[in-house]
Structure formats: C-alpha cells, structure tokens
Length: 500
Image (cartoon, rainbow, N blue to C red; front, side, top):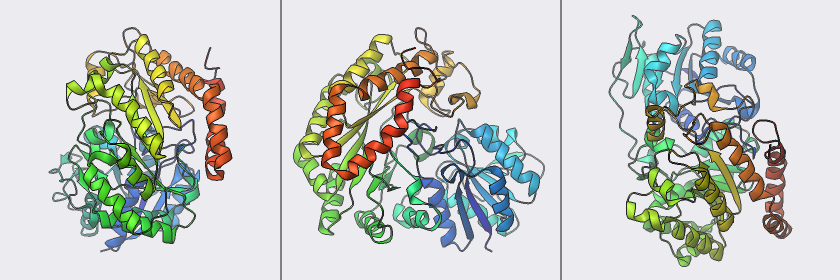
C-alpha cells in the first residue's frame, strides 16, 4: 500500500548544512545536498510511494510553509533529517507538525539520532521512530509496515515506541552490500531540488554530489561518518554504474559544471580508481570532478595524470595538523610508523597534484586532545607551506558516537552537553572543547586568525588573480566564495575583528 511521504530537511538557519561532516552555516556559503535523504526518497519512489522532498534551509522555507505543504499534499508520513547541533530545533519542528497533524507518523534519521536513538525518543513524544545508520531500506520497510497497520517488530535498523510507550530497539540492519541497487541520487535532485541552491567553496558552480563508495577503513578519532553511520567496511559501486551516473548528469542536468564525489576517501583503492578513470576516458567524459582524498595514498604523478584526463579537477584533503604528535593522537594513520612520514608524504602529494594540473583544497583542524598553542602555529605554517587552492580551518567539533567525543567527555573537556551550543548564535561552527591550556574561544579565534593570514597573504592573492584571469569559471567561483568569506575575515566568528 502506497503512502504520501515527505522527506524533510527541516527549517533552521538559512543555508544550514545538516549533512556536512561538521554541520553549520559555513563562512564560504558552502551548502551540502541532502544526499542521504534523497537516496531514501529515490528508494521510496521505486517502491511506489507518493514522495515529496523539501530541503527547507536551502529553499529558505519556514515551519509554516512546511505545515501548509503537509496539508496540501495530504502527507501521512515524514522522514525527518537531523544533526547534533540542530537536534533541539528538529524536535521542535516535529512537535509543531504533530500538534497540527497528530495522525502523521514521524521517523527521524541521520548520524546524531543513530547514536542516541533512545535518548531522542524519550526527549519528544512527537517522534515515533528512529532509523539507525544507513537508512534507505529501513525507511522502505517502515513505510511498508505503516501501510500494513504499523507492526514494526520486523523492521531491521529501527528503534521505535510501542503503544505502551516503551522504546524498542530492533535488530541491526547490515550495511547495503550492493550499492548498484540504489537509484541515482542525481535523478532525485532533478525532480525535487533547485540545483543552483547548492554550492561548495572549492567547486565550480552549479554542481551535483554523489558517492562512488561508502565506508572508510581509517580510524580517525574525530571523523563522524565512518564511526556513526557508514562504517569502516568499504563498499564500491561498480565502475559502469558510476560512469552511467556521470552520463546521466551530463545529459539531464546540462547546467552542472562539476561533480563532487563525496566518498569518505575516493582513492582508497588505486586499481579500482584507475579502472573508473579509464572508463570515463573511454566514454569521453567532459564533466570535471572533485573528490575527497587522503594525502598519503602513495600515488605518483602519472597516476594523477590519468585521473586528470578522466576529469579530475580538485582533491579535498584532510591534512588536519602540522604536528606529528597530534596526527598520532588522532589516529590518522593505521600504522604508527606512518605518523613521522605523514607530512613529507602530504607535501609530495600536493606537488604531484600540481604537476598533474589537479588543485587541492586543504582541511585543517585545531583542538585535538593533545593540542598545544605551538602545534596550532605549526598547523598554520603547514597550510602556508602546502599552499592549497583553498583552505578551511576548523576548531575541533566532537560529536556523540566518536572516539574524540568519548575521550573529551571522560577527561572533562566538554564545556557543555547542550547540543545547540555546537554553533554560534548565527549558526556558525563553534567548539565545546576546553583543553587544559587552550579554551574553546581561543580555538575558534585561532581559526579566524589563521583564515585571515592564509587568504590575505600577498602570494595567495596574486595566485588567485592569475587563476581568475585564466578561467571565467574559476573567476565566478572565486568571486562567490570571497563575497561570503570576506565579512568573516574581518569580524570573525563572534562578530569582532579576528585580531581582537
């Protein structure tokens, strides 16, 4: 029996990026697609349900609009996305929906509720159930059970409240082994979303985002997706399936200028990566692609040249810290002997990319649990030495379900467990970690100052001027990103100049 179901990225701050690894309103105006929500919507469409999908932060819609849309479309079930810093808001949205439409069923999904499903259900009677971890098939089976009268005992991966008010945790659902089973997420984007609403500071605009794999074998203590959601077992889409989606985007979304591959680590298997590159080359792919990558993949220039020929434009790399002891503490590498060579490999990686004509976006983090003021300075120096095309500097944000969160809590480093305080009042990134010799405020302000020193250096400005003169597309990206970033370069995260 089909249902009228709304897949909802609920209202919060305008352009709040729930699906980002560190959810917030970003200083670069980056806004992630609701990729997981769209995948689940695609599965529900395939099952014959009457599906609607609304990304309220992207469309700048409020709760009243959501309520009107639920009434207009006679919505019977809602799949509501969540995140740690927005969860209190998300529960309030669910309560407003239930107050007006008490018979509508609400299922919450996402990394945060995957970790604390019982806590979430007890926090609000408006939530009927939680889908734990990857949820496409859990949503499918929940909708099937709902249509059959609401017997949820056999829905794997579901935590729910029964008629007596008891919270029941069903058996876990195995991660999807054959990712080719899933519909193309770009088909769902085309059907429901305005492509131009989404922007990545390092990518050409407009773009679409999809994965070629799920899971990451690495055990970085802070990294939220593998620990709370997609796991450490890497599963790959077939080469032909990925290439088919590239073809679909090129044909059906001709305005798109970049594909962003949001795999946890795109080049985790070099042989398979080359096979994909060769297939894209064989098909004559003209779409540039960006992807997440590690710096210690041990690839030579020729490897990157093959990827460049296939369309590789930029790698987004988590360099994290300029201090080897911090790299070791965060368990960045699977083998400790790699810690002391990590920075040399990173520098060689950037040189190889530049020689092959591929840009690099560098991600840097301060506030790891053995951080010192000297190691923070080393991180800024490292970023300047690497000179990536763009860079981001984050204070650590520890999320429930991660090793970093558990250790920070055990050591008394958390300043609060009020999830709303993971953001500033404007919705920007904040940190709730107070280290013995560095306060959370100092972590945020160091990132503000590092960002200013990186982007306003004469060498960097000259590089961007030359890049913009050579490419109209890069000029458009640079102007968009700088327009959003510039106000934060001067006033900082707390509304003052970064140097104050």
